[in-house]
Every structure is written in C-alpha cells, then in structure tokens.
Length: 465
Image 1: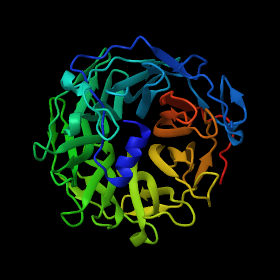
Image 2: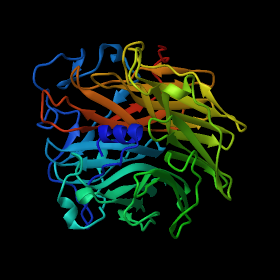
Image 3: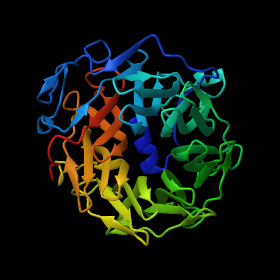
C-alpha cells in the first residue's frame, strides 16, 4: 500500500485497501531504477520551490545539510508512474538487511522485497497470492493485490514477512506470510479468523528464531468492526492465538507492532477507537508464555478530545520496552494537528516519555513516529515524518535519559513527501531506515519511490528542538 493509504487506514480505522497479486512467483521487472539517480524515474521535476543543497537532481533541506543520516541508493520496480514503498526493515548485521513493502501500478499491487549485502540494495523476487483476476478492479482508488507491512530476520538466511492480499472489487483481505530460506521467498499458509465475508490483516511480526515467530494485526467483521488478531509460528505451521479486545463490543481494536525478546515475553501495541465519535486510545497487550492480556497504558492529557495511537514497539528485554506513535486533536484546532508520542515499560508499568517534534513545532503539523528500534534500554532510534503541506523525515534518538531530534536528509522539491516507516538498529551506532519519497503530483506524474537512509553513529551529536 502507499504511505498515504497506510496513514489513512491507521488513523481512521478505515478498511485497509491493499494491493494486487499473481499466483506465480514474481520476477524482477525489466524497468528497475535506483534512487537517487538522474534517469527518467527520478529526474528533477518541473520548476517549483526547491530545497537548498541540491544533489543529483534532488535536494536536502538546508537544516539537514550536515546530517549524520545519509541517503543510500535503492532500486524501484516498474515504469516511472508506478509506486514503490518500503514499509519495514530488519537487519541482522551491517552487511545483511531486508526491507519489504509493495509496488503498485494503476491496476495491481505486488509484494516488494529488497536486500542489502553491505555494498548495495537490490530487488529480490517474491511471490504473490491470489488468482489472476486480482488484476481487475480498483477499490477506493487503490488497486487490489499483495502488500507486506512487516518483516523480521533472525539471520541472513531466515526472514519472515507478513501483510495481506486480496481486495478485488471490494472483496476481503486475507493474511499473507512469506519466508526466506537464504535462497528464495515462498508463501507459507496462514490462517484467517472471523466470518468468510470479513477481512484479516497482519501488520507486524517478531521472530526469536527461525522456528518461533509472532505476528499481529486485526480482523474486520461484517459490520466493519476491527478486532485484534495474533498468530504464532512454531516452526511447522501458523496458528491463531486468542487475544483480548478492550472497550464495548462496538469499539475497534487494532494491533500494529510486536516485539518478543523471549518465548514467554511478547508485547504488542496498537489502538482502540470508539464508535460514533468516541475516544481513540492506546492499546498494549502482553504475552506471558501462556496467554495474551491487556496491560494498562496511559494516554496523554485531554484524553477525551485527542487521538492516541501506538504504531510500533521494541523490547530489548522483558522489563524494557519502548512504544512510539502519535497523538492529536479529534478535530483540527490551533496548534499541531498531530504530535509524536512515546511510552516506556520498566517491567512494572507503562509511562509517557516526553518527545520532541519536528522543527515546525507550533504550526499546524502532522508529526508521527512510525517505528522504533532499541538495541538496549539506553539506546533507541525512532523514525517517522513531520510537516503539513509536505512531509519531511523525522528521526529521534533516546540516550537513556531523553529523546532528541537527529538531523536526517530529505530529497526532492519543497512540496514533496518524505516518510520513514521502518527502522532497524543492530547497535547504537548502526541503523537503517526505510520508507518512500513521493513527488508532488502537481509537478509530475512520477510515482512514489523507495527511500533508504543509514546512520553510522560517528558524525557528531543530535540536535534538540
């Protein structure tokens, strides 16, 4: 799905409009381009206000000219008008990362997998589920098909990716799980819950080993109600694990991210949405090796008039977890529309941790943190975006005492969109973030392009806002 489809689905609890599929394993398209470059897919666009410090036909915002994060060239599939988006990344070493997402034409969306070997990113063939008829029809402006939302790798030869497939002519979405054995990606059968006319979606996955993975998401019932979904892999098969829901039966519950430091300790995060103008609150659930249970989690001030959601979580141990997301007004009012939101777990309770926003704080803005990676309790990196008419990358760092903004580059023109959706850190000084760059449609018909950034931890201190 595109970045914007994901944002809409998460914030509004709208039915997720996913991509398209083909029953045969995908092969790299003939038209594959790498970003940044100066070819037809990514040349500079029509005249428009530009960011300073232009490089290779693109530019970085002036404040980021000496950024400690740097853009890494990454490939795109299909013709220039197609969308390529990376949603999640998992790195097991400095020379082994896997990123997943989707690429979409006007009529079909397919899985997208890219791999880093220490020197360059390359597209890796990945299969798609569903009949060829998914090539027909567009639902709510988004083509049906296959898309990945999360990935977890325990070694360079063992990765699991999750997402959903389906959606033709308003049809249902089903869970999608694929595994990497070091040679190829293959579809692994995964169950679906609820009525046959409902949908099942997996958003996040955490693997402790090649034979132990947990995936989370949601079920959409006939009445368009969202309920939590948890599935577990035991090395042989995937099975549904009962998970609770909070609030009245009419409330919507979704789980977006999960982190499992051990077989008897998993934490999943998401949100609860009340119907008919009700509140939007954080949702945190915990696995103790026997069952899932809801763990009390705080919301910020003015709970009745604000939206609170947690999008992802990272737990280096059972007693140290960090969850990130966003909060904002139910209706736009004076000040920022959305701001960053961080909570931490100390083994006993969850508490809100102050976190900064992008440089335009105080103006109408959309500041959100989509993912977080914590190699230790005193070293976390969170990524997301901020902006209003356009999006700019947002990276924040935790040093054990406070969160601060770390400069990160943006590419394109002043009104383009840069979003970081996934991050993976193998150490406090080595991180990789992925997402997408979307040229402003006013100036070009070029589609979304993959965005990859890396941090080497050796270029000076972070900058507070």
